[in-house]
Image (cartoon, protein in one colour):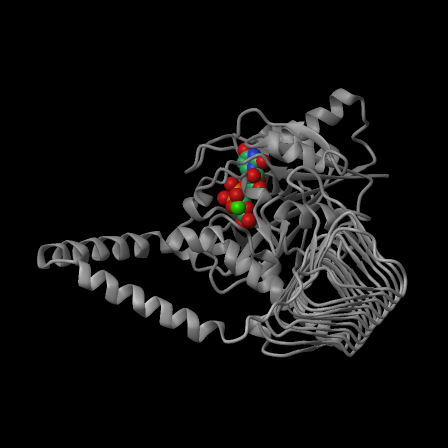
Length: 501
Ligand code: UD1
Ligand code: CA
């Protein structure tokens, strides 16, 4: 028996009002089509992805996960399935012994468990078709399930074709079906466009199969939220919110504390170990992983960040970075791609780290930029340390040996190496290697000019008196006007100067 899935995703998604194809709109950072395809993995041997609108944007992302089939003209869900089935026939596949699972690309919350139960019911009942239904509070816009007196499915009627009475039905068609391939091929040939939308409705297939004496099974979704389909941005927000809560609940069940959950967003691929505390206002996205007992937040954004056990990360933005066990980061730190923060390291406030390794136990407690650097163990980078990594053309590396001490406001002009245990005096600008264990001072020597201020003031006052004496009344007026002009032009210039400095 062959099990093949069709994913229908050729529609334009007009109501999204977007340049982006509807199925690429993300929920918690991942395109809705990604959820649909991931959910099918393991259920079927092959996925046929039916594309039309925006296919040039979709194909590069998913052509390794699915066989692409093009529906040139979007003439309805029935037509989309026919296009996929024709592809199989032309390829020479045998429709006997084939089960076809059909899902929509805009219904990303359908659960794997529901797919499994649907497949089981289909096989157990030896049906020709099975469909997933859900009872929802707001069935507006969806296909309604009509049942007979025995409670068996009779047909699906679309909102636009439904009578007022049918519209009151709250059991809806989720858009997930399983068919015997040969029966499906036959029923698709019966379809017509005699309906309110002038389209080939896949939903009519159910009616034709029943009319031909076939057996149709229906299964209720585990959770009505699975039926959420996305046709506009409002529904996108509703589906994302449902998914967000589902993900938070999952982590809480795994032993993660989440404070003020309404303020926390966690992506679908994030892994969190037990006894982690996620504090308010935190966003964890991408392939982020948080080790046991870590505390994340408040107000922290992590994208593709690996955090070790017991680390503490607060008020921090980090992307593509690693924070090892027991390190503390923040408040107000920025870790950019390639930042590797070692065990027990302390990264403090207003520190930016990019493409740098910081060895175990080192400290960068405040106001520093560390870029393209290899920092050893137990190093102290004091307040205001800057790796001057860019000469306007290329980036250069700074190496700081184990146990080195870099004083406040030091510029390390790369490429440069500071030896193990060396000391660099505060205010130094270092552009030559510092040997291990040396003290390096690279700053102008201090000069004290005794009594300078008083003498200088006195001289200044003298000059002013001289000037006044020389001037006659007209010159005085002229002088005042000149001074006003100068001071106002300086005020205007003030902002520019600040940017230059
Ligand atoms: C469809 C169902 C409806 C169901 C609802 C669930 C039909 C006629 N109606 O309605 O019973 O309650 O889904 O969400 O099937 N597509 C194509 N090619 C086409 C037309 C559509 O690939 O020619 C794709 C769309 O891209 C979309 C999916 O099929 O991903 C569903 O199409 P859509 O137009 O959104 O159907 P609904 O009106 O929502
Ligand atoms: Ca839809």
